[in-house]
Length: 301
Length: 301
Image 1: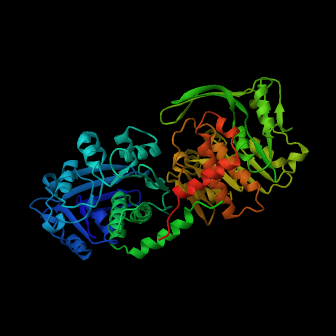
Image 2: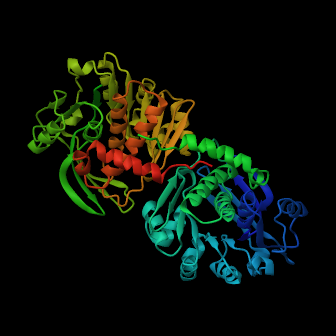
Image 3: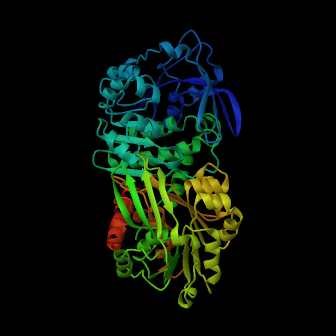
């Protein structure tokens, strides 16, 4: 089944302790879609400006991501410039929302019938907007960020009650629950509405809770983090893409999706921007997933 | 085979967001020994003062830990009073080293012949002192703390070259390597001398590296952390105790020991001081270890 992905498409300039790149393809929808396409057909809902570079249109087209849902409007594409310090904390140096500021997600009739949807990191009112346009959503997931959890809390809290999966990182989970301990916070999130709460902890792996189950994995031991941009989106995209290709949302399917998601995120951060992700094959993810099993397998006693 | 454990025996007063206890049995050797005794006979090398409470002597005796190596000298037992904040960061409120200040570990002739030794969190010169007294050490491990890594760096670096296992927590690993990323730091430690580097990350689990292998586990999802005191010592004690009961130090044995250690640490922190640990049975650890397998098992794809 297809996966609908809504989020941003951006042009990023990124500095890390390992070098820098200028004006590469970025945005939450981009990373999520590039990761999800390995597992299921993806339909994007996003907006770019008239300055959106031709090579990036071609790249998306080549990956089957350049459908009707990708609006092109007059103006500038969302631009972000950021620097990661030695501890890989992000610092925004420049931000211009451009045409994204007035983005009104408008699903095509075909998109309205898609059963699986990932509502990426955009304003909760836009996430709600997309959700309302779906005729028969079957498995839905969403992400967010600190700003919206702080300033649009009520709207976001009502949204997650409709979600099957909620993806947050550690600081967002703490912010939404007011709980510092992440095991407790993850369990708490699973009681706040979504069927499943997924808390991404970067190098420390991931915690997953439903009302009655718990699952966790350590991070895949990456040799060298080069650029963490998009890791969270690649994570959610992989998990949602994998689930869209399964008949049902079961706990076993979910755990498999989470493992593949961890692996995809670990590959994403080994090069700048979407460089690794845009050339990635399913076999690459499956190969590392098998290696992961040997590294992180609890032993029988 | 027996396990020799050297470290502190103390009297602790502990405050956490969940309550407080006064003058409970504490110290690195105590926690390590109470955990290790489940897997192998333990011989302690430590010192207490003339004020050491009789009930604590009886408790240690009941657990087989009150041997000749536990010196009793005139003066005060090491006392620590600490408070953990809401994020479980420790703040020392009072510290009196007492007789521990002039502790000279002196192994009995029988102890000198013990093959397995854990050099707990004491000054590196004392750790060296104990190591030199061992006639034929087979598997050795050590722990440390920030102060000694900072101020006795050279001595500690020479010690770890002699160790099979080095146990450090995340901040100590960063301090010793100068590397922030913990996967890299753990691998780096494994190239600095010890056969195996173990980096304990609290709720985030553990990273284990040899020169050519890597293993990691997430933390066991504890419902409520009550008091983190002694978790690291219980971890190392369990791992060393388990290994002392194995014919050889293999990677598989090590991974089993690490898993049991993670479980023992997770049980330790569910009550104040050594309350849980001193009444713990092997079956309790094995039961949670099996539950851990279901929660943290990478899936086959």
